[in-house]
Image (cartoon, rainbow over all chains, first blue to last red; front, side):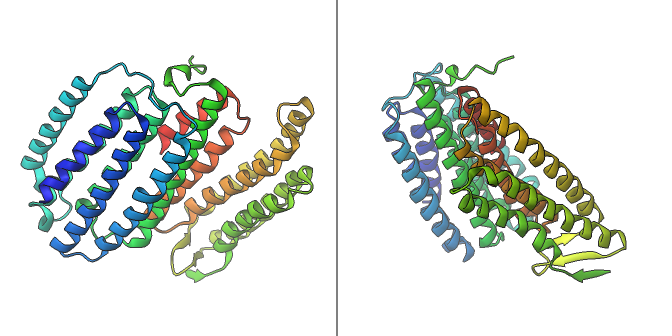
Amino acid sequence: MLQGLSLALVATSLTALEIRQLKYAVMAYFAQALLLAALLIAYAALLPNHTLYLWSATVLVTKAGIIPLLLWHYLKRMPATETPNALGFGLSLLTGAAVLAGFFRLVDGHMSWLAPFPEIAGEPYGTNLSVAFTILAFGLYGLLSRRDALKAVIGVCLIENAVHLSLVSLAPSLPETAMIGVVTDVVLSVWILLIIVAGIHEKVGSTDMREMAKLWG
Amino acid sequence: MESNSVLPWLIIGVPALAAGAKVLLGRKRPQSAGLAAIAGVTITLGLVLVLAGRVVQGEKLIAWNGQLYADGLSALVTLVIGVAGLAATVFSYRYLRNDVAAGKTVAERLPFYFSLDALFICTMLWATLTNNLIMLYVVVEATTLASALLVTFYWKRESLEAGFKYLLLRS
C-alpha cells in the first residue's frame, strides 16, 4: 500500500508537469498534496512516530490548502493553457522512468550509506527516499524545461514536497515548530513568486519565460 | 562567561518594530518614512555596539532559552550588518527622494521600501544571532523574501524579471 501511494505521488508530479491546461495541473498538485498527507499518516501509524501526524496536518493545511488556493487565485488572471514547451510528453515520461529506476538502484545498493542511523536503513525508508529523490528531479526538470512561468512555480512546489517527503527518512525527529517555520517560508515564497508572475503578466502580456530575457549579458 | 541578556532580543525587535511602524505611520506622511528608518537603524547600530562591547570583554549573551546566542563571531557580523544597513538606509533616503522627484517612483511607495529595508536588516541580524540550525535556514529564507520584494521595487519589466530569477535560484 505504501509503495502504491509512493508511485501515485510520482504519477501526480508527472501529471502536474505535463498537463497543458494549468487548471488541471493545479488540481494534480492538490491531489499530490493530499497523497503526501495520507502517506505521512501511513508512516506515522507504521513506524510508529506521533510527530508525523502533526506533519501530516501541516501538509494538509499548507500544501493542500493555502498553496493550491493561491495558485488558483492567480490562475484566473493568466491564460488557461500554458506556453508550449520545447520538450514533449514522451521525453518527460522516458526521463522520469529512467530517473526513478536509477534512484531505486542507488538507494537499494547504498541505503546503509545514505541513512543517518542504522535503524532506518531498510524498507519502507528506501522506497520513500527514492520516491522523494525522483519527485525532486521532476521538480528541477520542470523548473528548467517548462516555458510557462506558472509551471516553474509548480516545479518549485514539487521540489518542496520532495524535501518534505525526504525528511521522513532523513530527519524523522525534527520538531513540529521547525516544520511549521519551513512550511511558512515555502508558502510565503510561493506567494511572492505568484505576485511577481502576475506582475510580469501585467507588464509583458505573457508568462513565457523566453520573454524574460531582457537581462541577458 | 555566559549570561542571559535582553540585548539580542532588542537587536532583532527594534528593526522589526520599525518595519511595522513605518507601514502604519507612512500612510499619512510618506516622506517621513525615510527619517524614521534612519532613526530605527541608528538605534539598532547603537545596541549592536553595546553588544559588541560586552562580547569583547569575554561575555557570551543568551536570550530566549538559548535560542539566541551572541559570541565573538556574531558580534563581528552584527556590527558589519549594522554599519552597512545604516549606510544603505541613509543612501537610499537621498536616492529615492531624487527618484520621486524624477518620477521613477511615487512617494506613497516609500514606506513600503523602508519597512522592507528594516525587515531585511532584522532577518539578517536574526540569522547571525540564532542558535538553531533549522531557524537559521528559516531566517535566511526570510531574508530572501524581503530582498526579493526589494529587487522588484520599481515594478518594471527588468526588475520583475530579476526578482523572479532571484527567487527561483534562492528558494
